[in-house]
Length: 156
Image (cartoon, rainbow, N blue to C red; front, side, top):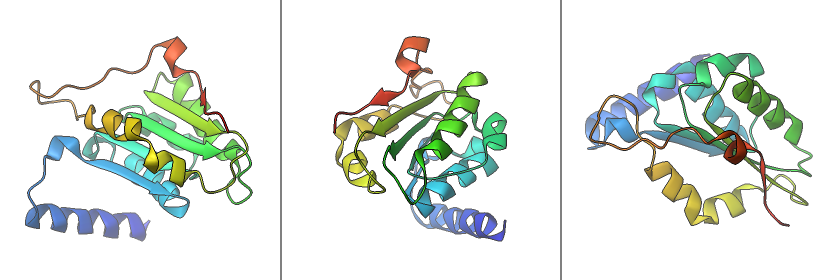
Protein backbone atom coordinates (compact mmCIF):
# COMPACT_ATOMS: atom_id res chain seq x y z
CA UNK A 1 0.00 0.00 0.00
CA UNK A 2 1.80 3.02 -1.33
CA UNK A 3 -0.55 5.38 0.49
CA UNK A 4 0.46 4.02 3.89
CA UNK A 5 4.16 4.23 3.08
CA UNK A 6 3.70 7.78 1.83
CA UNK A 7 1.77 8.75 4.95
CA UNK A 8 4.41 7.18 7.19
CA UNK A 9 7.10 9.15 5.35
CA UNK A 10 5.08 12.35 5.78
CA UNK A 11 4.70 11.68 9.51
CA UNK A 12 8.43 11.07 9.82
CA UNK A 13 9.12 14.38 8.06
CA UNK A 14 6.74 16.26 10.35
CA UNK A 15 8.34 14.62 13.37
CA UNK A 16 11.76 15.85 12.24
CA UNK A 17 10.41 19.41 12.01
CA UNK A 18 8.11 19.54 15.04
CA UNK A 19 8.96 18.62 18.62
CA UNK A 20 6.80 15.66 19.64
CA UNK A 21 6.70 13.00 22.31
CA UNK A 22 7.37 9.82 20.30
CA UNK A 23 5.70 7.70 22.99
CA UNK A 24 2.45 9.62 22.57
CA UNK A 25 1.74 9.36 18.86
CA UNK A 26 -1.95 8.79 18.21
CA UNK A 27 -3.83 8.01 15.03
CA UNK A 28 -7.45 8.91 14.39
CA UNK A 29 -9.64 9.59 11.42
CA UNK A 30 -13.21 9.42 10.25
CA UNK A 31 -14.82 7.50 7.41
CA UNK A 32 -12.01 6.88 4.88
CA UNK A 33 -9.70 8.36 7.50
CA UNK A 34 -11.07 5.85 10.00
CA UNK A 35 -10.16 3.12 7.55
CA UNK A 36 -6.74 4.73 7.19
CA UNK A 37 -6.37 4.81 10.97
CA UNK A 38 -7.01 1.08 11.21
CA UNK A 39 -4.62 0.42 8.32
CA UNK A 40 -1.83 2.66 9.62
CA UNK A 41 -2.02 1.20 13.13
CA UNK A 42 -1.96 -2.33 11.70
CA UNK A 43 0.99 -1.58 9.41
CA UNK A 44 3.01 0.29 12.07
CA UNK A 45 1.68 -1.00 15.42
CA UNK A 46 4.77 -0.06 17.43
CA UNK A 47 4.64 3.50 16.21
CA UNK A 48 1.37 4.50 17.91
CA UNK A 49 0.33 4.76 21.54
CA UNK A 50 -3.35 4.46 20.61
CA UNK A 51 -5.83 4.55 17.75
CA UNK A 52 -9.30 6.09 17.48
CA UNK A 53 -10.87 4.96 14.20
CA UNK A 54 -14.30 6.50 13.62
CA UNK A 55 -16.77 4.76 11.29
CA UNK A 56 -13.96 3.11 9.36
CA UNK A 57 -13.46 -0.37 8.01
CA UNK A 58 -10.49 -2.67 7.82
CA UNK A 59 -9.51 -6.32 7.50
CA UNK A 60 -10.25 -8.50 10.49
CA UNK A 61 -7.17 -10.52 9.51
CA UNK A 62 -5.11 -7.56 10.71
CA UNK A 63 -6.28 -8.07 14.31
CA UNK A 64 -3.11 -9.89 15.45
CA UNK A 65 -1.03 -6.85 14.45
CA UNK A 66 -3.38 -4.51 16.31
CA UNK A 67 -3.28 -6.25 19.70
CA UNK A 68 -0.33 -4.07 20.74
CA UNK A 69 -2.27 -0.85 20.12
CA UNK A 70 -5.00 0.36 22.48
CA UNK A 71 -8.04 1.13 20.32
CA UNK A 72 -11.25 2.99 21.00
CA UNK A 73 -13.47 2.83 17.96
CA UNK A 74 -16.82 4.48 17.24
CA UNK A 75 -19.59 3.75 14.76
CA UNK A 76 -23.20 4.75 14.18
CA UNK A 77 -25.61 1.80 14.13
CA UNK A 78 -27.54 3.27 11.18
CA UNK A 79 -24.45 3.97 9.04
CA UNK A 80 -25.36 3.26 5.41
CA UNK A 81 -21.96 4.28 4.02
CA UNK A 82 -19.79 1.91 6.07
CA UNK A 83 -21.97 -0.63 7.91
CA UNK A 84 -21.37 -0.99 11.64
CA UNK A 85 -20.79 -4.71 11.02
CA UNK A 86 -17.35 -3.81 9.59
CA UNK A 87 -16.29 -2.42 12.96
CA UNK A 88 -18.04 -5.22 14.87
CA UNK A 89 -16.06 -7.90 13.00
CA UNK A 90 -12.72 -6.28 13.73
CA UNK A 91 -13.60 -5.56 17.37
CA UNK A 92 -14.70 -9.20 17.83
CA UNK A 93 -11.41 -10.41 16.34
CA UNK A 94 -9.41 -8.11 18.61
CA UNK A 95 -11.32 -9.21 21.69
CA UNK A 96 -10.82 -12.87 20.80
CA UNK A 97 -7.07 -12.18 20.84
CA UNK A 98 -7.23 -10.19 24.09
CA UNK A 99 -6.50 -6.88 22.38
CA UNK A 100 -7.14 -3.65 24.31
CA UNK A 101 -10.22 -2.40 22.48
CA UNK A 102 -13.22 -0.26 23.37
CA UNK A 103 -16.17 0.07 21.05
CA UNK A 104 -18.82 2.77 21.26
CA UNK A 105 -21.81 2.42 18.98
CA UNK A 106 -24.35 5.17 18.58
CA UNK A 107 -27.97 3.99 18.18
CA UNK A 108 -29.95 5.95 15.63
CA UNK A 109 -26.82 7.59 14.21
CA UNK A 110 -25.83 7.26 10.57
CA UNK A 111 -22.43 7.93 9.06
CA UNK A 112 -21.74 11.09 11.07
CA UNK A 113 -20.50 9.43 14.24
CA UNK A 114 -17.51 11.77 14.34
CA UNK A 115 -19.33 14.82 15.67
CA UNK A 116 -20.27 13.10 18.94
CA UNK A 117 -16.92 11.36 19.14
CA UNK A 118 -14.72 14.41 18.67
CA UNK A 119 -17.00 16.53 20.91
CA UNK A 120 -16.53 14.09 23.80
CA UNK A 121 -13.81 15.19 26.28
CA UNK A 122 -13.51 11.59 27.52
CA UNK A 123 -11.98 10.62 24.17
CA UNK A 124 -9.14 13.10 24.70
CA UNK A 125 -8.66 12.08 28.33
CA UNK A 126 -8.42 8.45 27.21
CA UNK A 127 -5.95 9.29 24.44
CA UNK A 128 -3.71 11.33 26.73
CA UNK A 129 -3.67 8.47 29.23
CA UNK A 130 -2.10 6.20 26.59
CA UNK A 131 1.61 5.96 25.90
CA UNK A 132 3.76 3.46 24.13
CA UNK A 133 5.44 0.91 26.38
CA UNK A 134 9.09 1.44 26.93
CA UNK A 135 9.30 4.59 28.98
CA UNK A 136 8.41 3.59 32.56
CA UNK A 137 7.94 7.23 33.53
CA UNK A 138 4.87 7.46 31.28
CA UNK A 139 1.61 5.90 32.39
CA UNK A 140 -0.15 3.43 30.13
CA UNK A 141 -3.74 2.57 30.90
CA UNK A 142 -4.18 -1.22 30.98
CA UNK A 143 -6.62 -3.00 28.72
CA UNK A 144 -10.17 -2.82 30.02
CA UNK A 145 -11.45 -5.67 32.14
CA UNK A 146 -13.90 -8.10 30.57
CA UNK A 147 -16.83 -6.14 32.00
CA UNK A 148 -15.44 -2.79 30.87
CA UNK A 149 -14.52 -4.15 27.43
CA UNK A 150 -18.13 -4.79 26.51
CA UNK A 151 -19.47 -2.58 23.79
CA UNK A 152 -20.59 0.73 25.08
CA UNK A 153 -23.84 2.00 23.63
CA UNK A 154 -24.42 5.72 23.78
CA UNK A 155 -28.00 6.92 24.10
CA UNK A 156 -29.40 8.47 20.92
